[in-house]
Length: 155
Image: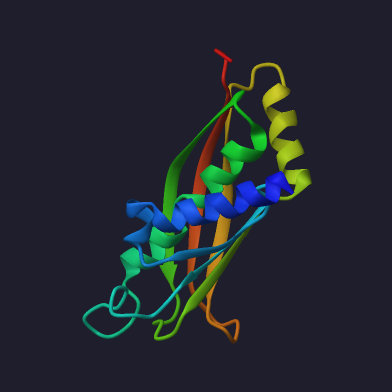
């Protein structure tokens, strides 16, 4: 139960944090184990651009921090995690609320740990993709993220 309460407090913290709040996105779910996060990005006066669709900056900013945060929380303090690269592909103008889900599997986490435990491997880059979809499941944008992960040699 304590983990569930902590996850709800993190969700609230994200939504109140000024940098994230400014994106127009809202975190709707944080799994207690940090292996899943869901967000919404409403089409509103705050996220709308000059032509009436969701601003591309809001689309990217709403999904930016999550894979890095999820890896930091799931791998633990003995790892260093940084966002390294991003790519946004706009597929269709968005005139309605968009949704995105971020997931990390146990197999992915074990793969990262195993790769970094290999002699001579100092760091690795992991590539993740998240789709922003409308209520009908139509993809409006795809964001690719490259995340740098290394063992913290000082830990």
